[in-house]
Length: 539
Figure 1: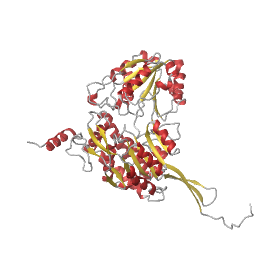
Figure 2: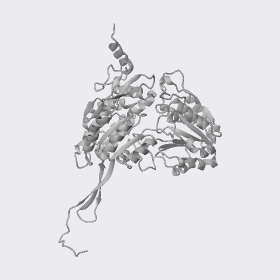
Figure 3: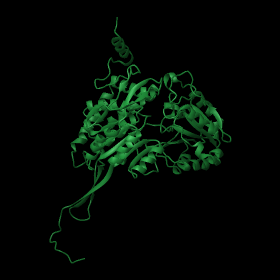
Figure 4: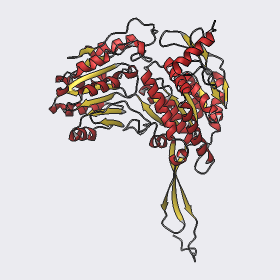
């Protein structure tokens, strides 16, 4: 008779093409359960360490107590503080100091990308991510691919090219000015739950390539993924002392921030926390916070099936838990007359829990979601287009939300009068739909002007004049235009970050890394004394 282990290995080999978890992994996401929980560790001073106390994380699909995450606090945080205070302001490397580390990280990026192409590692990372942040196979695979391409982009000499300098001629012989991208040195990185591998990896390794030494904290619900990824990175040659990974509650992290005086903190998450961090650090933050993201459908109707599919993806993929998710759609009356909403309704109805095309909402419970929906439906002219009900026949724990993809129609004039209620972000499978006529476009633009967070947006049209008019009167950091325009995209090939806020943090591209993780420094070389120089008259 086959033992359970052999049977499991055969099953994995049949399903995934391999029979064991990667050699560096300390967690088996395929068998993770209440009977086989996993205990995470902190990485500090180059060593993996246990904590005195732990927080229990439940499986978002069934409520199993399947993870024990360190609740680091008290005197345990002192080592993290001490390590950050040791880091010089000039960083671990810069254009003058330890430049061979640029090559170290170029080689490391290449090695990580190579490892991530292996089926057993790709599937391990997919499964680990899906266990803590349930979303469809397509969404998970996309996150892993974007992350892998980031490492491909920065392999080889690209960390050196990333931080390249420039020279400007001086105003006399022997003088020239050289501009450098300079690291901050001791920094911190706080990452959210919704992209457990993509956001922390892209920010962390951009930070490291630039020469900084970070302390990183991930939302404890999903920090398993980054703990395992760091084990992969160390196995690929990353110096373990280059980063501290801490699992803790917000109070402990806040104390570390206050006692350490990091030179910059990169934060991705809610606007409320972002504002608090801004005050605590006197503005030394780079923020990618919540985004109430809009889409405008122009007067020219075409490719209606494709546009409806993209709207369904933008609003409801990953159960709407994307900072770039479509929160409000302004459709020209031509689209509404063409039956556009019915097409989105039909597409949203295909989503089901069994394939995780809809799933747990990790920051809003059902009562909070219902209260928000009820508050909008109570407004003049508001009506439910589809959804509006909690999911049934599931075992999602009550601490998490579980709702059908939902859309509510709200008239333009009602939005104008009740803007704060309508444009409150529900981080779940929910969107507002409104309709406008040709002479109401400026009313729509006035709504966009009132929004506080300008992350992503889409102008769905092939009318160049229409696109230009909307683009010239809006400020979103990532604005997609054209008939294929979306609000959600791939940040490894373009700037992805807010606009209009001097604290705005991008992610993924060279421009984003330089804006977030480096500051500008100039060194003026002046070496030639003029021939026959004499001491001049006093002046």
